[in-house]
Length: 602
Ligand code: F6R
Image (cartoon, rainbow, N blue to C red; front, side, top):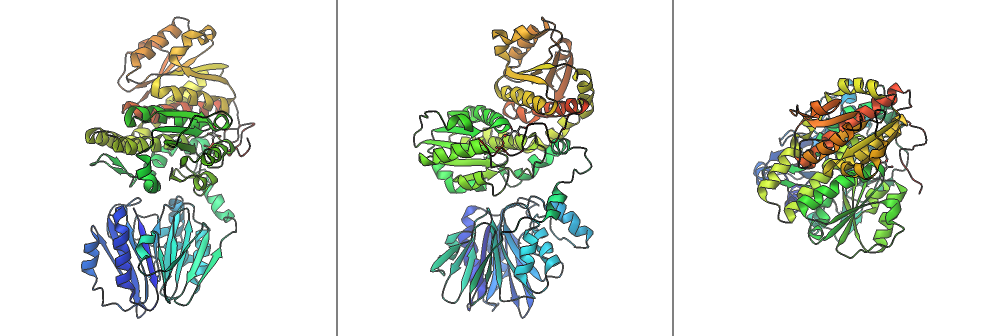
């Protein structure tokens, strides 16, 4: 994983930077680089592969500069190339910086900067920060960094230097660790304390939104408290040509799932790499039981996670609504860990449950989309979805991203607990194909629009599924209720005959999620029972299954994938169906009545 080091003082910076990078390299990296200024000229050296490759390019003692920054990179945005390695710089080779974290709105920022004439030389999210700082630079580096960071959405730890404002390092953080080491007439910056231990006697841990101005003589810290620029909100709020955020967010799922996968899968080794869990990785090996805490759609993701984690990682898992967990007697022990799943990271019920669990001394980890949110701060460690901001009130892309992260977590925990290499490779490879399969699934949009027209006047719907797709039945029904205000009930397909089937007649349609998986035959039997009572049925089935057409009224096909990953595909037609039914019924799609995007009350 990435590492930052910076030095300013009386000694030669280069050997100290290289020493720091060596100490940070244990976390895994694929390229490295440093930059110093020699007589006002930047010396920026980078190399792919081992740190020795960088060392071979540097005659360590040749450079006399007393300040500089360095980085080891683990690729996320953009391949493993020298151009993508840090440090990155602006067009004028004035501003250089190193960065840990992910800039979520980098695409929008990059497009805007390109329109303004900036030339980019890498595929990284990081480079936008250098150009943004360039845009605001008027001689005082800290001022320009402050203005640039107001435009940025995501997680960052940064160290920045400028040729035209020398003898100064600007360090800043949000949701990614960064410390400043205080030595004898010298200061250091690092993302990992090990990197600076030999030189620093004391450390200052930067807090979120703090910007440090470090010179050879002293250090001062600015707290950036001002709210984000409205300009940014407006940009992010753009619907990108779609009539509603909900549709935009449904259609951008190949990307919201695909981008965060970069750097998180090592297919050849059948492994998932989740940087946010590094600090608790060893502790996770001793976890005997997991309690997933979440609400609404996020709880449905948790229910899919329960099936994944029990089947492939062998961890007994229980899923509970935050509002229930808090007020009942829980039988927990120190080997139980809490996994909170939340898009906003602010949901009061989930947060309350975390606080309760922490009081009992439990380890709490999170899967959170909103960077820097309260849940991301309250948990001991966690994984960001990095699905980008979700504006539509009904959760869509955050849900599929939660399912993907749960699959990654299952892979990580499974491989810690005896999952074979072959199985690990199979799962990792299939996860990497998901963005492409989601894209194919979205091709049914026009057909689903027609189905919405056909079914929009029914007043009641049943959604049924089994095993991995039972939570998708619950989620499909929830989406329809939220967006179209129609009555819909999700239930286990096998439960139908125990009571609900009394409702079925020609006016009560059922959506049956029946991909070709281990429970397909059982699903077919349940669909037969509904058809025998004249209930209309829409089936979600696997491409190539022609038989199902003979049984049901309508079929929407999804591509074939591993059973544990089918929910990521099967939910998509249900999101689109809810959207188009709601639209045809004249509902307020992005702001459904009575609902709020972030539920901060109990
Ligand atoms: C439904 C929906 C809600 C949220 C729930 C939890 O479309 O969005 O059910 O899933 O309020 O919110 P987060 O994930 O922000 O904790």
